[in-house]
Amino acid sequence: MSDYRIDEGMEVTLHFTLKLEDGTVVDSTRDKEPATFQVGDGNLPPGFEAPLKGLADGDTGSFEITPEHAFGQHNPQNIQLLKRDDFESDEPEVGMVMSFADAAGGELPGVITSIDDDQVEVDFNHPLAGRTLTFEVEVIDVKPATTH
Image (cartoon, rainbow, N blue to C red; front, side, top):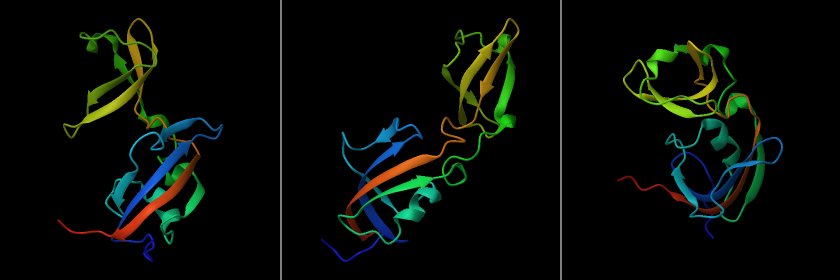
């Protein structure tokens, strides 16, 4: 056990489980290696880091994270209609996640939400946008982050 508590500049190792409102698990480290990250390194959205501040080795907690602090609200402007002809290579199917090039030249995942003869509707919102999530953690280790 150390006396360190989670704060900026700390390296944290923890197990976490992320659940939807109905208890469905969307992500968990329970069946694999725990997650290690540095507070403020961008691996966790700030809304997930904030409730961890002050926790120490061996602490556990369950936190409700609202959409504003998790993956944002569902934004109707992130739903776009694309021409069916733009999908020469793969036949789109409803529910399929496809990667699209974004304006910056990166990749943007989108979920196919509907298809008709001429158009394909794609939702570019984060799959967890608009959801209130339960973030359960078990802190394993807290130590000052070493700079490489």
